[in-house]
Image 1 (tube, rainbow, N blue to C red):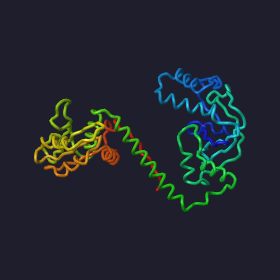
Image 2: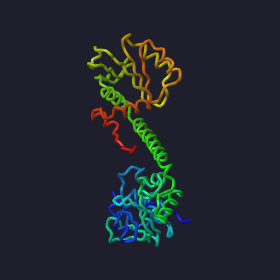
Image 3: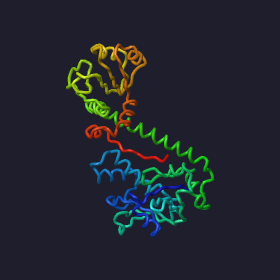
Image 4: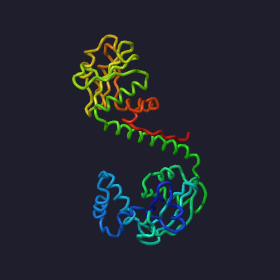
Length: 327
């Protein structure tokens, strides 16, 4: 059965007029030459690796997938969609012929002829369809429900008749994006080495108003960071911090060992990116000094909450970009 594909018109849709006026969709990758030279996906993969040997393997694989999809998976009779952000509309058409290589188009020589059927304003689509069409890939298969909504809007030129659901859909999309973003941030934090993680925790404490002193490498007698108002540990509160950056959860023996070297006026912070066992949390609750346990979830949440106050050195360890969402 015919499928529906999104083919973006380059970064910021700079080729949208060419798509519309010349009845085509196209992609770049001119360095590869005609894609008909590659009979199999493996041939194309070798071609990508040969022309961009410095790219990471994953980047090469992603490029191969995008180019092969355009050359071999999009078929005559399939529906194609592209977005014009200046008009906030989706151009919809049907693939009218097989792939061709057009050397006269230097930047976008790989072409599929298209017979355009019309345009659909973004405001006519449901929130779930808008979300489906928001993927950043240059080429991707549009889900069947989103494809049906596009064709409905193309024929009727009327908005989806579910206005009462829109707000709930948008809220769900926002929650999904926030949850995914949080997991991505945790994934990036988990890739830091131990020294970087230690500096990240120290930077967080500085953002919260403390001065910090990091213990030199080697036996630290249960402390990696000292945080206090003066940075020397003379002024109270004096926070002693232990940082464990490993996969395994910390248990009660590690918590007892940490508490064993503490003074009665100390306050403790134990950071474990591998989490804590139930016994470890019980040990912390009955500690003889105030002790907070911080796993990677709590660490990332604290970093996000205080990100604007982090110094540049700390931000470089975990670069983040703020995303604004309408409420």
